[in-house]
Every structure is written in C-alpha cells, then in structure tokens.
Image (cartoon, rainbow, N blue to C red; front, top):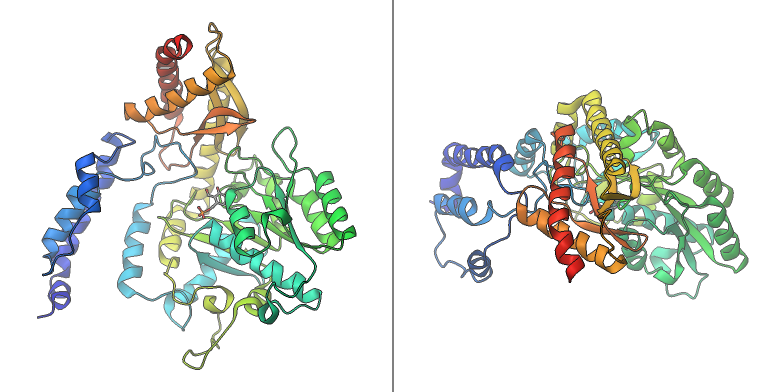
Length: 486
Ligand SMILES: Cc1ncc(COP(=O)(O)O)c(C=O)c1O
C-alpha cells in the first residue's frame, strides 16, 4: 500500500495526535520564555539532516516536529512579544487553514466554493475599512509587499497606457519618459523593493519629507510632482502610509487624495498594519480618505490574527489589473464566472487558498470583536505613552500612534552621551529577550535607538503595559551603571 494511502486511512488518528500537539503548544505558550534561542546542537542537526532512503513513519515525522521544531518559534505568538507588527494566529483560523490545505483548492480560479466565498469576504474587508466595494476587487496575496507590488504594477500600466506606451509589449526599454513614484520618508521598506522590482529604480522614488508627527507633507508632495512634470517625467503612483510601521504615523490621506486626483496619479494607501484602525472611533476620521484611494494594502496577518501569510490588496480598478496581468493560454480555461478569477489580476497562477483562514478569523471576531481588539491595542499604546511620560528615567521618542510607542530608558541621574544611550537601550532590548519575559526589539527614531513596542495580541491588557514598564525599569537600572562605566 502506498504510504499516502495508508496515512489517508489512518488520518483521524494522526490528525488527533497532531491536534493534541497543537493544543499543547497554544496553551503552553504563555508559560514559555517569549524569545527562545535555538540551541547549537539542534541548529547543527537541522542543517545537516540526511534525506532518508526509506520514508519515515508518520509517528516519527510528528515526533520530530514536536521535539525539534515546535519549541523554537519566531517570538510572535506570545502576548508579551511586542516586536515588529506581528500577531498570534487565531485558533479557529489555524483549523480553517487545515481545511484549505486538505481541499487543496487554490484561489487562482475555477468555479469552486472558496472563490465564491471570496466575493463576500472581499466585501467584508472593504467595508471594515471604508473602501468602496461596488465594482472593486480584493485579492489575498502573500503579504503587504506582494499587495503593493500588484497595485504599483497596475498603476504603472495605467500611466504608461495614457502616454501611448504598451508596457506589456515594449517593456521598459523603449527610451520613454521616466516613471516616478512618491512616498513618505517613513514608509515601509517594501515600497522601495516594489519600485526596484518594477524597474522604476530608487532614483525615481521621491521620498517626501514628513512633519513633526512623521506624516507626509502635502505641500512637499505637490512641489515634487510639479517639478517632475515640468521635467517631462511621468508621475505614476503615490504611496501614502495608512499607519507607518516604525511610528504608526498616518499620512493626511484626504489632502494626499486631493493631490492625486488633481494630477491624475494613482493613490495607493499602505494600510498593511494600520488601516484596520478605521474601526477605532479615535482614528476613524484619519482613515476616511481610504474611500478615495485607487488601491489599498491591508494585512489580515496583522490585526485580524490570521496565521501567516495573508496580505489583501483592495483595488477600485480590477480591469486595469486584468489588462496588466491576464494571459490565458490554450491549456487554461478562461474565467467566465460570476466572480473574477484572481489569477487574471495577478502574477501568480497557482496560489494558496487564504480565504478560509481569513474568513474564519473575521467571522469568529465579528465586526465588533475586531473593533474592540483594535481599539484596545490602541488604548494600551496610549497608556504606555502616558506611563513613559510619567517615569523620570524614561523618555518618549515618538508619541503613541495606533498601537505603537517608541521610547527609551534614560536615567535622570546619569550623564550618558548619545552613543552611550543608544548602547544602553540596545543592551536593554537584548536583556529583555534573555529574561524570557518579553520581546522588545529596537528601532531608530530621529537617529536614536528606541525600544519599540507594538500591541497586537488578542490577549494584551493593562497588566502587560505595567509589566513592560517595570521590566525595562529594572533592567535599565541594572545596565545603566555598566554602560556608563564602559
Ligand atoms: C506598513 C507596512 N507595510 C508593508 C509591510 C510589509 O508586509 P509583508 O511583511 O506582509 O510583506 C509591513 C510589514 O510589517 C508594514 O508594517
């Protein structure tokens, strides 16, 4: 009997064992050190495994995963992991993902159930953030980077087409005018990667200066576009921050949308992290401009707690994406469905079904559950901001925006210069990891090393803020002497 036939027959028993392991993992996580270093012996073993000649048994495979892999995750599932912009997986979404992989129905096309579900799910996501759903399309891609790449491909296609340039046949080698994109100096590194990948080149990505609150300055944007137009360039896209990764800054979306409309430039909002905060009454106004964007990046694998990976692209112009991407050879059936086939609007053909896990997480939370989660995380950042301001040995480097706070330990009594303060805070971040009590990586704000905390876990509460302040205070006090003597 083929081993896979055997496993199929034995699926319930193997599945029960797997689910038991996963349950132990999820329930055990809070008691585990937040940041765990893979021991040298395990590293070496994992890097030098020989390919078995005869297949292993399913029990050996599960035991290997339990013993050698599961104890050493990226520190993102624990509620005291404050690094980057990462959330834990919603348990029901983990299970829904197993349904997707079992059915193995990619989301590329063909009339199957998940593709029809996608119509409702896309509408849900658009409505949650105030993006007009009528005539729009939602694609679930690998993440924010892929979503922005897709949007900028369509934006580039539109601008080139307006200039009488067929990008698909001519490519970028026809000696045409320069295509230029605009974004804030605070935007995510993925924007630069997209511009590089699209052959635009970073020389043609204008980094627009920001104000004191790290928001793109519309006057500077306008000047840059005018100068480029006067020089014969083709401005093709503005990428506005709908929640910058580092500081949570939200660009003035309405003012930027006015400029985009005036100059006929595609407005893309990178709301990968932040646009979900349209659900927080304290931030809703600042996200209203999303309704005027041509496209938006929004990551379900951030606030909605969808297991990695999933990045949504929302676009008002499905037909432009189709014009930029669609290619249907004889051996593929063209989509004549009631619903658009994603593969005709994107680079990939076969791709994973991210709809079920995303639907499951959102369906389980409901609109009010997601709004409560987002709002609670933002209030926790406000609370941390207030605590930092009130602690004599702490300094706020960027005020709370969304669920992000940048601060540092700065002993009031000490006389540490800028370099020593940077070093001290880098040491504190390492000590936080080594303590196992939290994960708090550093970033930089105005060229100073910051401790950057981002709240995104469904279980975060005020006790976490208190714990974090005490932890940094304790470690900072014990390390300050060492750094100042050195
Ligand atoms: C604002 C923003 N944009 C884009 C990205 C990139 O998204 P991804 O890592 O899913 O490609 C991130 C990731 O943290 C982000 O915070």
